[in-house]
Length: 377
Image (cartoon, rainbow, N blue to C red):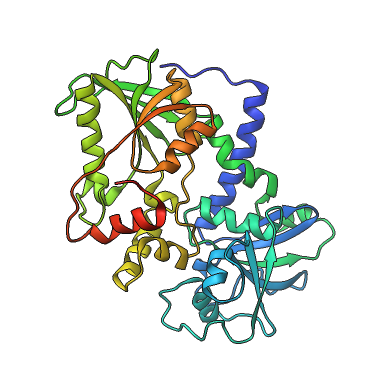
């Protein structure tokens, strides 16, 4: 399957995406980037990469107000803000030591102090702020959603960044990133892949224009796109899908969807790169560790600073549109998926229940899904 030629508009979108991608790569290496929003400029480093040593650049005279920014969810856990706050900037009169930073951002830290932490104050940061943008960047990077920040006092922050070898990213670019990645998804390859129980299967790989992570469309049988297509939106789950983990029902749902679609005569299974409800595999394992200490799945995510569900369904909408699917019968127990597709123009004519037996390891997980996340079983 060929890729359409890029227009000037495509090139401009890719430039925005690549800027965010560069910033994400720097953060994942533990380096610092510059975030700019409405005249505000911050030097930003992911808080989880702070170790016992000094913070490079953060001791300079042209930086001020060294703080820690976290999500409203994490600040609420610390007793310092309302959970609905987009982000919260934490400050302390004498600054933060590396161990103090770890205690603020990591519920598994050995040196957890009193809640709220002694001497720490929190100030809400809005969705257009550089602090919120910085926290959002760590979510895109699949890191803990917390950053060490310092205000750049130089008159020209862009020139300062260039002189100090720092990547610059703007708030509008970061906040548009998820939408632009979805909007620029294009099919880049396809192949016949016979599956057990359904030999007539084709997989189409979709990739955003910036070369980011791929999502897969698994076309089973011969779906009739002139009628509602039996469809499953399945978020990847390494532990359940590949290893057969008993902690969730993801593997059962994946294999059950293939069987159900095959028996229907055809349909579409979208395999979306949104591990751990969008928080990534490493953070999902962190949440699992918290669950071993008694937290349910929702509370574990919130302890880490995430929302209950960080997934977005714009990629699924784009993929269905590319496949010519405008109406679906959706295999799901999650009403949020129905609403997400409907909001973006894909008609859900029927929700098809997708339930499998529980076991001693995932019963609590499924119970939380029903009671706290609104899943229908």
